[in-house]
Image (cartoon, rainbow, N blue to C red; front, side, top):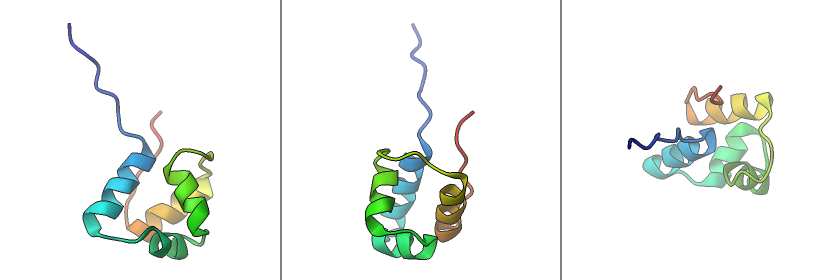
Length: 69
């Protein structure tokens, strides 16, 4: 029986990029125009993502991640 592989969330993908590049979350938050605690909450999935935050975080990280459909 094959087990379906769950797609990574946009937050998990951002976290991977942050870790791989050795970035600090506060640096990403500053570039995205949001507070450090708010970015932490976004990455932990504690707050809903807005289109604006997705756009700003993608811009800060130079990524083009979208929400799964």
